[in-house]
Length: 282
Ligand SMILES: [Zn+2]
Image (tube, rainbow, N blue to C red; front, side):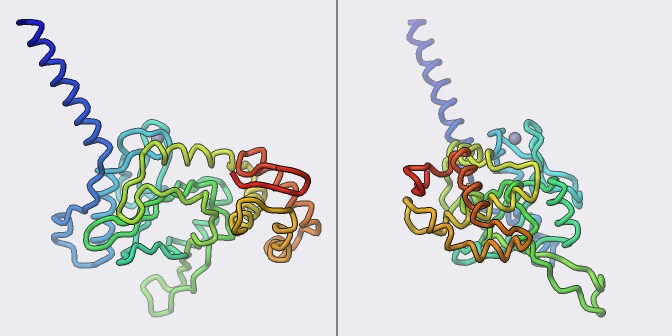
């Protein structure tokens, strides 16, 4: 009799535990509309509801910690941090009816952005698109995918503006290799949490200490991704030599540099050398 009862209690405890796990891994994609009450400006409403959503739904895509913490408002370094792995995150969001991320995302001051990137101190970036009070895309771009080349300088604000002369920037996310855009939610579908963490871990090898090295590595990776087939030849990458020369005008040995970067990409597990001058994407 007692054993039966114990079994029942254990079964119920396990069930609750499993239900709890299901609950933890399930994200509610809807924003809390009540938070918009009292705000008039669209951009303020957007900031309040999207930041609230991240705070209540987002895990740390780097270490898997269950929650992210919100920095106090207007903290210049970032919007969120993970208490466990100490990573910082910035959130940029925009409305998009057809869940189109686009190629550019508006960010803050140009000079601050360049300074953060060159000193390797920029936070990881969350890019969110939403429509009708719900998230339809969320992706993370690890901070080591940022190079000055992807930061576009905007026109200074006009004389008549409150902050006349201020120069903002756009992040040209279209220039970032696909490996650096890790989806957490794609077209309103949540990706598996462990897949997200795995994909992040895979890109860790692309971290470099010097910003110049980072530029070359990411540029060649982006070229490799643009080759439509998985198997490719050295000549298929040399096609991009002129374009790479324009980006790195000081380098007179672009072909050598390409071969060197392909070796790095092989060592970092992004491509395989199949035979002399022949490669395969992994
Ligand atoms: Zn973490």
